Image: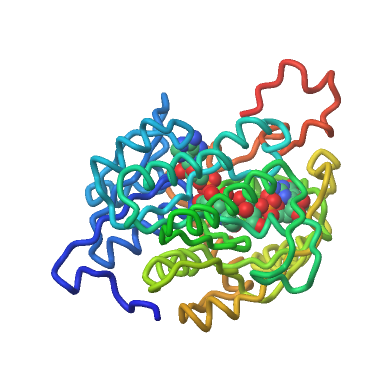
Amino acid sequence: MARKHGREGRGVVQKALITGITGQDGSYLAELLLEQKYAVWGVVRRSSTSPMERIEHILDRVTVVQGDITDLSSMIRLVEEIQPDEVYNLAAQSFVPTSWQQPILTGHTTALGVTNLLEAIRVVNRKIRFYQASSSEMFGKVQEVPQTERTPFYPRSPYGVAKLYGHWITVNYRESYGLHASSGILFNHESPRRGLEFVTRKVSNGVARIAMGLDKKLKLGNLDARRDWGYAGDYVEAMWRMLQADSPGDYVVATGKAHSVRDLVKVAFARVNLEWERYVEIDPRFVRPAEVDYLIGDSSLARDKLGWEPAVDFEGLVHRMVDHDLALLRSPEGSRNDHLPRIRPGSLEEPPSRIAPSRARGRILS
Ligand code: NAP
Ligand code: GDD
């Protein structure tokens, strides 16, 4: 049965270590754990610029520690020094198109990085509870609709393949060493903190820019792809609940409703009273070498065993994101500068097979 509250209520402050704290989910999870009175440590990799944008507002309440998921020694050192009760592994190279451009780095980070953390826990203290950020991308070319914990996997990208390794190594350490290691098979979840390259934020940001007269067109790839989109703030609660359960397990976390990229575009443009057909252009550079056409999850197990359910629906999510990006552009910083936030053509999103060699040469993929 799931514990309702963190163990702080028993007079002991719980300690949590989060990898990927600077990412979308890391920031929401840190907020949730702070609310639950945890002491929170977040792993941040060294960078020449600051990646703290999403956690600036809580920096005085979390402890930032340096480390890299690909570096076993730093993982062991951190687990040894902090002696956390719970470890949440959210660190990954998480953008699917980049995984075709950097498949080996994606494997080192998204796959082997998981083993580094599990090894650290195995060596230091096997009582530490572990959460692995698995993904619906592992279902890829789906073998069943909707997808459950028992649906066979068929990944369609180097990212999906790497996540599948991370998933199975988590299961394996649970079975081999008796670790309380759980895997959350999370379907797409979004928020105003989503990276600009993912389609929901690309659309909300693009719509806001067009509404403000800053852009004329929004270029996208496959409008027919369907995803089961939820709100990141809801999904981090499922992560936490998995580690409060008496026994570990694998859980699908999803809303159970799918929408197409076209639906997303329609709802987002309607929010600012514009007709999407006038602004959206299809650009083959954003079409992937292998696509995941249709994801829709059945999260009955998480609902029954963890008491988890999502609160924000698809329209509410899209409205929230468009409203946020409009407010951002209207803010004093936004009106002073045209640099906020913008995806440059020819940036992160193009899979290599779609870039003509002459155009690709010499381009810095920022
Ligand atoms: P995100 O915004 O891309 O965040 C990824 C985080 O990983 C960032 O904090 C990043 O740090 C960190 N990171 C990357 N490489 C690292 C390394 N070598 N060592 C240490 N940290 C590293 O991703 P997200 O949307 O929050 O997703 C969180 C996790 O859930 C990821 O594992 C993702 O694959 C998985 N997931 C996400 C979804 C979704 O829809 N969002 C669905 C299923 C699963 P920097 O800030 O330094 O880059
Ligand atoms: N990014 C992007 N940009 N996607 C586009 C575009 C575009 O211009 N046009 C259409 N799409 C389609 C993609 O082809 C894909 O089918 C869908 O929109 C969603 O793309 P993303 O938002 O990039 O997310 P994702 O589904 O590939 O991956 C996300 O969800 C996974 C869970 O299923 C990431 O967060 C992964 O880390 C996560 O594991």
